[in-house]
Length: 424
RNA sequence: GCGAUCGUAGCUCAGUUGGUUAGAGCGCCGGUUUGUGGUACCGGAGGUCGGGAGUUCAAGCCUCCUCGGUCGCCCCA
Image (tube, rainbow, N blue to C red):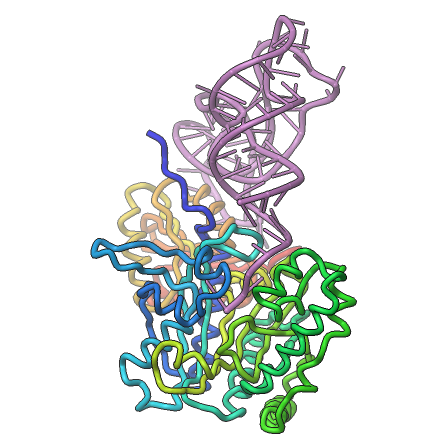
């Protein structure tokens, strides 16, 4: 019988990488509490219209990039491709307006029907933070400062830059867009084939084209700054002032855009060149127009999300530094005794490594592969009633484990006790 | 949807211009070592070389198809 294969674009995460994954989530959880963001848990799937209506009927996104299927009742359902639309739906259907301005945070798996490549998977994972019901620029600032703190606490901020832009309010955005379309039409011949195509479907996207032929045309394209209303200028000014006041560095990126119409004002991405073609580590912006597309009242909101896999790639090794002791029975008839000792130590908070077979020498070697050089040998009581020996090699911290263990198990039981300094 | 590239043992990989019975390390299994200072020693099992077709006296190696991985394009909410 042939073993079924995993679904394309899914991953089985193991060992050190899984620890790094958990580390990202725990840092996120700790920091979001500092900012008093409420934890929420969301369904992994929704009616397809939750996503299709929020995305508009635009682009390949709805038609090709979503994991959609029919359930037994004939309803079209979709595995969530993002958090925001589901959160917006929940905000409306649960009457969370009463909590506005509402700060929420969540994390978990998302699904997009794409070809996998570096840092892109069909099932991927994000951390996510949103502020709903706040039109004030300080909401944007707080979210950005929180994002910055998370990246710094994860230690991944090296080589990561915050790109910041404003799309203005609706009139500013519309005027800029019209000017861009006119400009690109005039320079159509100089554009790549892909961008000529974009001109019809999603002209703003020409601005971040990767094709070298587009670069000179894009460089001279109309700038949003020339189309901003005074209100929009004022809003953006308050965002940048807030970032300056909080000492968060950023780079103005006038070509940073969002394809969807409901985005207004602030748009931002933390980017790096260390992740191949997928440079965005964390991205977000203000989506004041989204609630209405889901049939709700006009509701200002702003949020961001970050890919956990990408953060893990930037993180490198996450060492578990918790001291641990390997419990090694000297003979088969001491297995049960050794297991009992391990249980007692663990109930008292001592991290114990155990195996289930092979002689103590082999087990010790195996523990060493797991980075554990502190050993507790369990033997038959000798003439003096000593039935435990303790050895450690390495940090002083490991040696101090002895005192903790002796206190729990009784010092009188120990025969040989030795600690050796690690030699390079 | 398109393109490039890779696919040999459970894992990571060698394998010459096509030429006997396809190798190593790790892991696994067995044994030795009666041991406690940093991961010992010896032995063994394990492969339809991703799958299929073709070229050839002969294919892991060349050609085509197919499946899968990786990376990139498109897309990126």
